[in-house]
Image 1 (cartoon, helix red, strand yellow):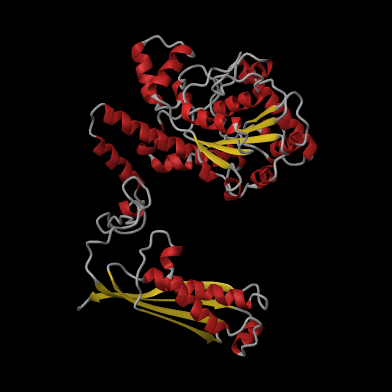
Image 2 (cartoon, rainbow, N blue to C red):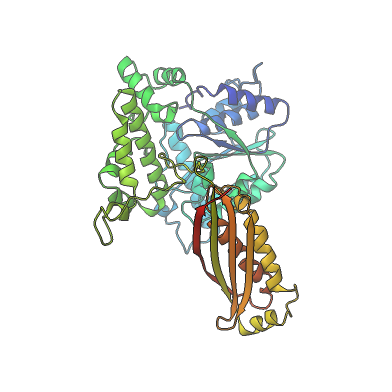
Length: 495
């Protein structure tokens, strides 16, 4: 059964087709966009265009030649589609040699492609599915082969976030870097991701990003009528609204193969009723995806309430109330709820997005802050610092200069800090034999609308790091600690 037609995305298709026609199509692409918007189907369209034997006048694949038909039936020998798989079900755990794991991955991918040929409307991968390092090794092996039919090979890595199923498991992602750094001249690699920020920065730096936007409701409607055969106008309108420009969500309630499209309908209700039980109930491998699904469900519920003309303010208040720290609601710790005043995070708006605080209405004040910190070192390192015998020079003097410079550039280091004109910065680094080590004290003063505690803390931190850098050849096990704000004051400013 061939894949359903690619609906919408005319602008990005035109860009990709133009790049291909001019010979400027990047060898490594990242298709990024909302879940279910059709990123992998677009990648297959591009693979079809690359292999098409008779493209149309508008650089569209003809759909009739042998190569086009093979791509649409997922049988083209030069198009390699990698999707997340569950090796655990196949005994692919530890103790199996690498070659055997690669065979298991190849078998799993072959079975998945056969299933998708049988039922092209597929759901997202299961929660425990991932791209294991064996899958990337299989990709590297195939990357080294000569194309079997055409002039090029196309590799599609769908749901690339699953290269890192959880923090600390970046082996597969790092292995993919080898392919992205210097892909063979006859190969194109396309990775897709709903959350590009979940990818390694080193991967993002080696691909050309292409944003895949939501499609128009008219296109979603056409797909529902043509591909899904939905005839009821009321049902079609309801599902098109719920899809929010993502065709994948349109068939959430149809008979798709195992997936998650229909699994998060009550996520918002579950979270609002018992947020801590919801969080504790997440399987580790699924936690990030489950939380994202819950957020999507909350957003969907908000849109639904708004479209019905309901009071969305109450729902927003309920969400905000559940998201407040438990201690602020008096659920943990001692004292009454009245004693635990709700502390609002000033750098986060009501939607949870980071923001810089607007201090324009605050009065000018004389502001001062004092911070300290220490670095402990071995007796021998302490002696060399005291005797100025360190090869890099006078440790204390250099660290004081570094701290002063850092205080003046705090806003460049800490994203939401305000740039301030500092009136005075005093950094003092002194030897403390009882540590043994160095104590750094920074005092910062300005006339402004916001405090200078971050400038003082930054001065201390950078001064201590400078000490470490200069003395690490003598003692690589030094410990920086106790960086804290000692004093913060403000007083009316007299012009």
